[in-house]
Each structure stands twice: as C-alpha cells, then as structure tokens.
Amino acid sequence: MNSDDPYNIVVSAASNAWKPHAIQDLETFVYRRDSNGENQEWTLSNNGLPESKGTVIFILQLNPKIGDEFYCLNNREYTAL
Image (cartoon, one colour):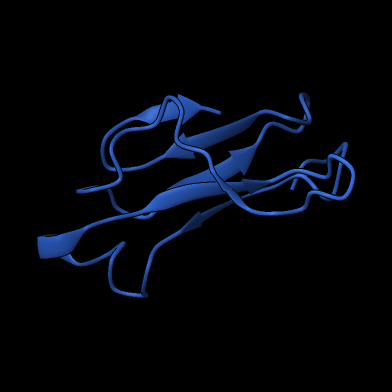
C-alpha cells in the first residue's frame, strides 16, 4: 500500500495458485488500484515489467520515502514502478 494513500494498492497475482511457481507454465501479473474518486477497479500495471509468461511471482516493496514508488523483484529483473 502507498503510505500517502491507503487506497493506492499494488499486488502481484496469477490466474491460479500454481501459475507463479510452476516451472513449465510460469505466469504472473501486477495489478494496481488507485483511489481516484469513485473508480476503485483493479487495472493491469505492466509498463516497464518483463513479459508475464515465464515470470515467477513478483516480490513488491514500497519505497517509504516516496509514497507512490514501488520496487518489483522477480526472476528476470529488478524494476521501479
């Protein structure tokens, strides 16, 4: 969660429990929900991230000094969101 805005949430997710861990069929996504007014729907947030196919579950970390900056670690690269 964003420390400046608790409704701004970033999550790592998959279509089922095995997808982010199965060697043969890896697939993981990052979704974001913002609190911009009444719109609180989850949206796919993949800009700057590697392709979801072949990617293990993303480990996410908020930058406590910059409330809207998240870091993403996976088996392919390290990225700032």
